Length: 485
Ligand SMILES: Cc1ncc(COP(=O)(O)O)c(C=O)c1O
Image (tube, rainbow, N blue to C red; front, side):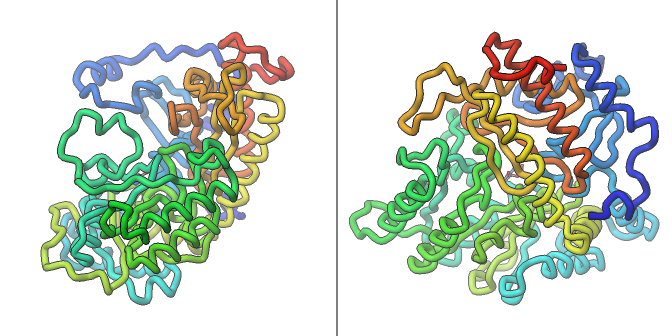
């Protein structure tokens, strides 16, 4: 890839030393600025990221962000996978400036503009032709969760049914319908009025296989169970309006089903007449090594939910679906902020670059390189249970090797170690997130423009942080001391 050659250097010279300085300064403590203290005072108790990443951000460029104390960090959270081109990519800035300088309308409800038409054309050009040919698009309120709500309404209206099928470990957003489809119990445990008739099905999480089998056998049994459920007239479950799943689960712990499993799901839903909704809010737009993750399996969905990267770092969310499902009445999914012109311009610029510069292939190569580093660490650290994911959507599940093994012979989740590694990474200049069951999975979602050198730097920091966290926890590492910086 020629990313570095094609654009002006993304980083000012002074920045080059930033992450290095952070590497040397592993004892840095995040003391908290006045603004961080203000945030803790006034912002709701539901605030989440700042608890684990207590930074006041000041500048951002490429894969780096700088805090108010002048430290530079590599951003492997990247707006939870939003920033495909990293922060403030020149093409994105130029697209936004073009709108501003041209005095274009910034707010348009769902009225037509040049920016909107360009965005639609760019998105449809990125989609597989067989899907784009008969597709319709609905612009939603600017959050993934609103697009999920739209998808639910769409299939319920089209089929006249109300039940939904969703999966263990799923994350689809925080509004009531999306929450009802969520695997994680935390955010919905105090809420009444989840949509009724949601059936949760086993997702192929091989390492913690719900059937105690794992691998291809676990997936085969899971598909058999789902097919039986949809076809058994005595299953007790009414035929669903739709099935929704993330083609690669993100928040659930970075779980990528095999292409065979996805093809099996496509066959079963098609035969049962149940529309298949793929939520690619997080895994879409090149991140997994293909423009859309479903392309790994050579399938097409009936409904595709997109957000995050499609807005080129600004809020945008859409549903793209087969025209046969379009039995909506006018205004069936309205919303004031469906015409975010800056997001459409930034999104079109992002899609164009990802497609034309083959950042999907770059993500595949960089993901393989990063996963390779993690796999070599796993050979030395029994605390790494599994390294998994696809492209630049990677997860490292931490376990307690001293704990009791499960039926598959795997050690238990190690939330404390995952959290300690996250903090050690932060001290060394690397931002990443934890997720998955019991928050035991370290998650890597770097911008797709990350270079091989930067991948190696991420891996170096991670190795140092892992070594330090393991020592901090008092565990005996089967590892050379010089991993610990
Ligand atoms: C797969 C998936 N779907 C939906 C959503 C919800 O998107 P938003 O947070 O923009 O509402 C997310 C957010 O992380 C997601 O990862």
